[in-house]
Image (cartoon, rainbow, N blue to C red; front, side, top):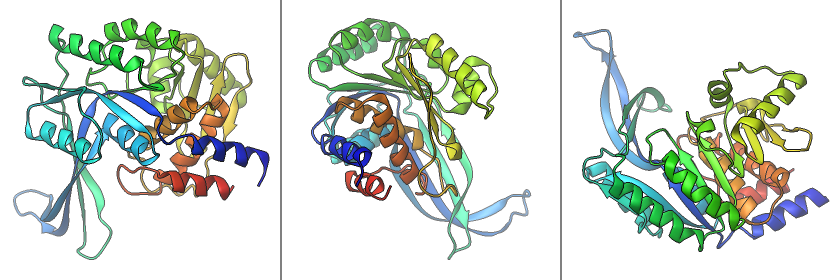
Length: 334
């Protein structure tokens, strides 16, 4: 076992008990399974014979589960509706032994829900054929903002890091971010950011984790593979996000870490490149990255661990998590 492996394993051993606040959009993922029967006579569409439904936590909830399976103590900060989906999200969080004290309920808000329809022959693997999104924007009321701010201020003295998971449902509000950002940084608490469409709206994070489409949207710059393009992209990302580091995730091409004052660090994908499902992989990456920073890792060490974790979950169907033993095994097999 070489020096890098030993160091990464030491960091993993520090994961249990780390307290991480997860501020973001809590989504209910529904999976509807069926088998195909025939083409409808009413329209040229498949008829599905329904078999079963299952539910899981999506969005910030997936980061919450990843942190929990890695031994951390996560604290959800967010908003759900008083609807069936919201009650289910709250119940699923509590069943994991996670406190929902800072998960607010808004009566005039529909909890975001993503329904994925998976179909196939009766004895074959089901494939996703449709996704239905039920979307809602978290109300911008003084009461909700007051309670979110109070929760974030209270947790600042308790947690080792703050993970922000912005799926564009506006739980993460720019004016609240401006208020809590200096408080967390002043106390030396790492602040990580994963934002779907507002990467540049939350400047000064410790680290941000855009994927290539999110980078393209933020910089209005198409992806390329050459080294000079990556250097210039890193320079722009660091300048416009004002982050200390940016981890750009590139799917089967791995990741690239940009840090101020250091050369870019390219990390090839670990494991097979024949990816099964990327659903929720970004949640796993930022969860492990944040947890590693909270445990004292450098940006490069944290990015390496996040890359191992991402390589594990993309080989699983649907939103998935990585266990602490699974992460250790991946590092050992290097």
